[in-house]
Amino acid sequence: MDVLYFAWVRERIGLPKEKVETDAATVSDLVAELSAREDRYAAAFADLSALRVALDQELSDFDAPLSGVREVAFFPPMTGG
View 1 (tube, rainbow, N blue to C red):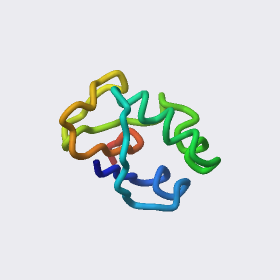
View 2: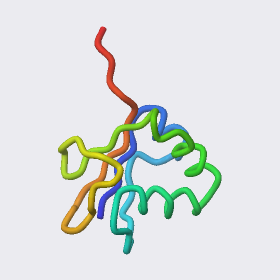
View 3: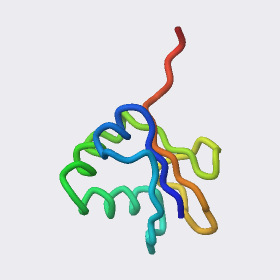
View 4: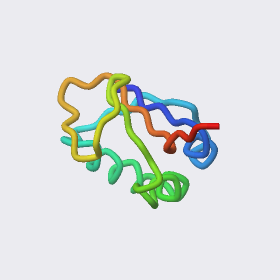
């Protein structure tokens, strides 16, 4: 699946997107898998309350299943201005 990173998540990880082969059942499982890769991923996912996730371009929760999902996007909450 494609995993996309936006704003400071992209800056911490150093990539805008990547293809990930995973057996993760949920978004939380994927986050745990990515966090275990390297310190830069662990830093990006250290505070999940500061992150939002979208599955196939629809806002979702971290306990959402990944079955059939083609794209996961991580980004900080959006603010108006």
